[in-house]
Amino acid sequence: MDATEKLVADHLAHRGYTNVVYEPDGNIPPDFLVDGNIAIEVRRLNQNHFEGGDAQGLEEVAIPLWKRVKELAGSLGAPTENESWFVFFRFTRPVEAWKTLGPKLRKALETFVASPIKQKSTVFITKGFELEVFRASNPHASMFVMGGCSDEESGGWLLSEMETNIRHCASEKSRKIKKVRSKYKHWWLALVDHIGHGLDDFDREMFRDQVSISHDWEKIILIDPRDHSRWFEL
Image (cartoon, rainbow, N blue to C red):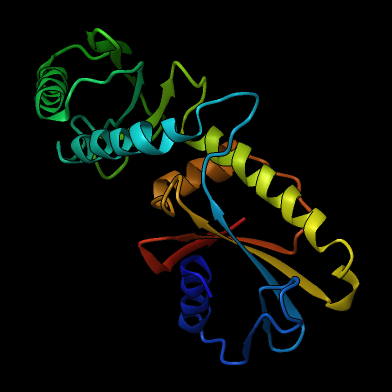
């Protein structure tokens, strides 16, 4: 059992499943069998190469950058005037080091908060990086919430990258189980999410609102690789 499979096993135990068999039919699908009739295939969800794309770019640059901007945005307090604002950034490589970029972004957002007139605008721009804000239709718990990002070199942002790769994984695994699918009544796909790392509640809401994925699995489960108890279903 590899690390990805072990994390899924811990996840199933956390959810209270006790009758869990690893590789019930040997080294063929499924990876786990639950209660004798739920077959579960496991896969790591990460960015894949599509038409020559840079598979490492999102995980090594965009994801850490997304998380830092998100943490910064959330740290700036509750909404003023009962209004929240979405934050959207776009970037190209190389990205300025966060130790210098972070303070500049904080100052730009604090200046926006202090401004008596607020409207959709680009509040910060430098070589290879732009930060925009636009009004949310409803107030949230914080003044600023993440609206998205765009990697100008890959042409994608977090949720679209997740959508693309979930589709790829679901199709790949469907082909893999085709010959044995009739053996079990239920088939679930468990994806250990190394792109969005499980997403938070707001990102999940955005994902469900903006992303529609057709697939032939009864359930697709996304699990945070850092914490097997954090998960959501598609």
